[in-house]
Length: 391
Image (cartoon, rainbow, N blue to C red; front, side):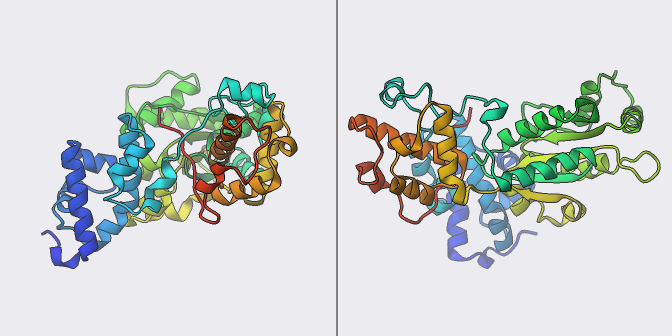
C-alpha cells in the first residue's frame, strides 16, 4: 500500500511534484527514472515518488542521487552549465548540484603564448607521464593502500567526486606496481560502455578474457575456471585484483555479487582476487545505506580521495612548471589563496587558475592579481568544486 501522502512535509511534497514536472517535460518514464537513480528503488517506488505518495525517508534517500542523475542526464543532452542551473533551480538547493557543473576553462593558444607557456597547464585531455603526476603525503597513503589491496586481495572502494583525481590515481598505482615487478601483480580492467547494464556473468567473462582464457558456456564451469587460473597465479606469487569504475551506477545484484568474487579462495585460507571499486560519494551516501547491502558495507574498506587543502599552491606550481611557467611570476600569493578558498579538487583548481589567466590575458596583464575583476565573482569563503562536461 502507498504511504500516507500527509507524511511528507510541504517541502518534500513540492519536491515530488517538481520531479514529476521535470520528468514529464523531458519524457522520463517511471522505469527510466528508477534506472537513472541506479536501481536504488523500483518502478513502483518511482511511481509513488512522482505522485507524492512515498515516505519522507524515500525522498531523503534518493534526493542526492536524483541531483547527480539529472545533472548527468542534461549534460548528456548537450545542455550548457547555465541551462542546467536553470533547469534544476526549482528542484534543488544550488549547493546540491552547483558543484557538479562548473565550467571547464581551457587556455586559448593566444593566452599560452602570452604567458610564455608551452601548453595548457591544466589540459584535462592530457594524460600525464609518470613524472608529471602530482603527489603529496595524503595521496601517497592512498596509493600504498591500493597497492596493498592488489598484492593481498583486499576489498576496497575509492570514493571521490568528479575531478578529485581518481583516474590519475589508477594510472599511478598501475605504473608503480609495474615498476616494482610486473610478475608480482596483475590488474584486471573490465570495460563496459554502460555500467548500469553490467551483469555478474559479464564481469566473469571479462575476467577470463583478460586472463587469456577461453570462456566456457556453462556458468558453473566459468567459476571453476576462474578459480583454477587464479589459484595457479597465486601459487606463482602473483597478486590479482579486478578494478571497476563508476561503482555507484552498478545494479544491486552486481554489487551484492562482488562479495562472492572477493571471497573466492584456494580451498584453504587464502583469497584469490582483490576487488577495487572507484565511484562517487552517492555509492556510500545512498547505495550502501540500504539494508540489503549490509554484508558489503561490513566488508568493504572505504578510501576517500583526499582534498588538496594546504597543498593547493604546490599543485598549481607543479602544473605550471610542467608547462614551462613559474607560479611566482604568473600569480601573486593572494590570488592563489583566493583560488584555494574556492576549490579543493585538482579539476576545480585548474578551471579557476585558467579562468584567472584568461582574465589577465584579456586585460593584457603579465600576472594574475587578486585585484582583477575576475576575483569579484569568487567567494571569499564558500567552497566550490569543478566538473568537466560529460563526453
